Image 1 (cartoon, rainbow, N blue to C red):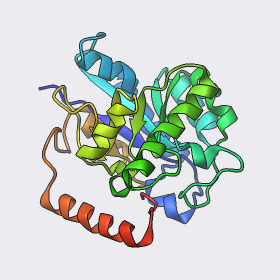
Image 2: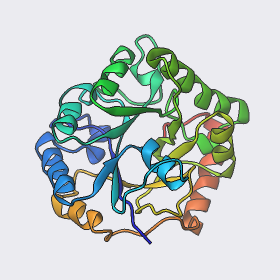
Image 3: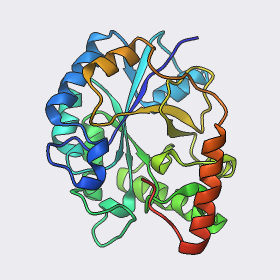
Image 4: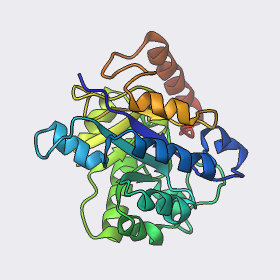
Length: 263
């Protein structure tokens, strides 16, 4: 079975805030990792192209690779987009609308962020834009009405800015559940990405596509291993008992304290 690396990046900067530093890649290392992806000979695709290919709605190359970027940090519509475009690498950017809209608030701690008005620029660089909720909560702990709003609001906001449908979703920190996945489908998304730190595959689930999360300790060698389809489990697979237990604990905590930042 083909093994499909779907990479998850966050900020690409030299001096990130402490809270996101673990999930930040320095620009020089980012460029080296992108060069390794190009050298692997894999065919880069957006999430939308991958999902269409898996569903038989479009071509699926033998060795695809997908790059995704979450949240919408300030580097995204500038040097990060330029690094991708200069190597002809498409990507899918999932934006947290509450964090990038002036005057709005989100659960994300303070960080340099892009602005909502820059969203069309991402498409000019060849990126696909998806939603990453409005406030970045742990979706699998929310009441139904709050869950519906977190899924519907960013979709509507991004569609207004871009002038076309937004079809893809990323769960903050990968937190999801069967109920969350059903809600994503009802909200009009045709796919959703999780984390799972695993390779995806043609049998993966369209509403929790596995991604490999890049941490600051990862190197070009790690990326090269993933490009060879090694170094990580292959989805789909069932949630481990600790994952289920952690979800139950977080739900109980949210019932007492309210929505919690997913991170």
